[in-house]
Image (tube, rainbow, N blue to C red):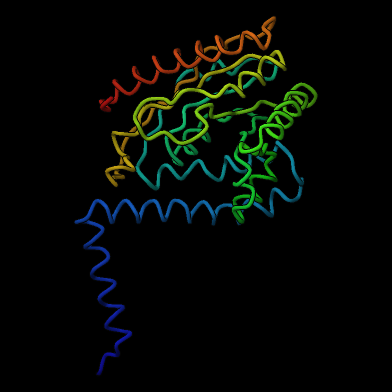
Length: 268
């Protein structure tokens, strides 16, 4: 029986790809990241019809979270959570977290409190099924390139938090940080907390260097610890106090980050 060119190419593909996956860490990295992004797009397709029944509603974040919780098992990532008792306050709050990569989504979904929505860059809204799922989940979109728009969104977010008992999750570094530490914090989240007079709850995800490095093109199995730190009150503070509050929160998070990462043996 003759084998066509297409069949030869298929056989070659089925032989070469598994070998490359086992022998090349770089190839494995791109395969795993490609699947990660593609799988999230697929999960968004499944989530949209369910969330659409409510329309745009913060309660849809429960559906999104439940659909994401299993992803860590696909990648062999063990996530330990500490300090969730610090979420046990009745008033709204602003949760702030360090931002290392798109894998932060796994840690976020592991601890995301009820009625809590992230603040995300506006570009995410236009990312097909993911953007629509995020919109239905009540995620707050902000245009970081237009200061006036960002201030307006933050002001509206402060009113929404108090009026609808909503919590907000912010990455104050403003962008992903692969350096193994923390970038300086932008002050928007802290202005929001002070304006609404609600606590700031810092959340720290340990370094991924044990199993993931974008620079080295490495993605294996590993462990991550997510620690929720005690709330930092803002009642009585004014805009003048925001710089000191920002520094205080960042320092507490940096100490926790270095401690957690040291426990896992991640290089600093």
